[in-house]
Image (tube, rainbow, N blue to C red; front, side, top):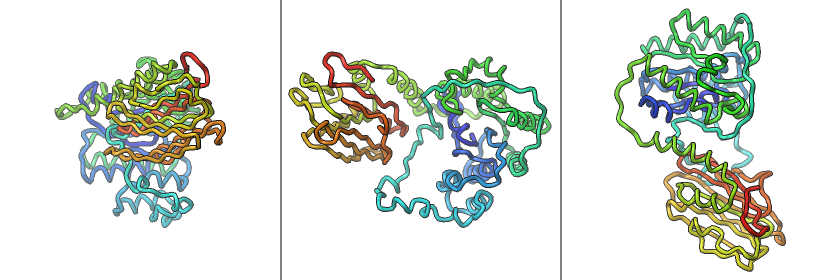
Length: 420
């Protein structure tokens, strides 16, 4: 069981742990999760499970604020069942703990916009709590020659509580620190965590240590997105930690599961998709994937264009149709096709008959009827500041609830179309 903040759910990929050593795991984490909420998450876990190992990511050990922002607390607590443990968690999380009781007040400004998808859980079970990031933001990770510093009082208190709770339940605890371009003060806190772990016989694996990063061939120039590991960095860290856990602990034999193998293949299929620039090659690749391809047209389409999306099951020809509005939703793997074409602007709302609950709204307007292109997945416009003349495409994986790619192709031009 992995606990911690976004640095946990972006770094530890259960699919890799399974692939490497047959270790099954789940990342039970939330954005900016402080240690006092990690503690209550662990209490919730132990009500129904007894993990063979607990891995705690300690990035927020440096949290100086005794109370996080309400929005952060709600992201951490709203999905927990209403139990005494949740109430206690709210008491330590909110300065005014009554604000945490009713989640609806936080959304009062959009009550009129609610639809059925807002009340259905957007389950992401196949990911096992992992969040893959595909972009690259070059970073520099360096170590500082510093001495230790006292941890913030509340963080230290709850680190001790987590250690005690793990000991009381005879569950091994492993402390980690995810890759990050830390500053000197965070490095001081890392030194303190290292000393605490050593004094209590707890393993501590510091993935900001440049020597360790070199060993696992982690390159912060390509293996990070923003302040988190991307999917490629997560693979390197997960492979290393999986091998470490397998060597140090005796895990019970498990039954094989195809879920993890399918998941791993999806991550790298998405990476390949982003690197394809040619329109025909792009559609060829999509035609074999179990994904939903949402398409809207903007401005104009070349008059010589025939059935542009035939490879995905389309039957609409654009021949001699220059300034038209168009929306299409395809999943060739499942034989799903829904299209509209019109000389007027189009608004198309749909909820495919799929066990994985999601909602799509597409808007298309040609040059003469407004000249815009929008694609909403679960009420989020995926084309903000991205729509361009021609076909705008969003590729959505309903299995993992991830946007795999957005792309635009200038269909105004003749010849082979290339991604902008």
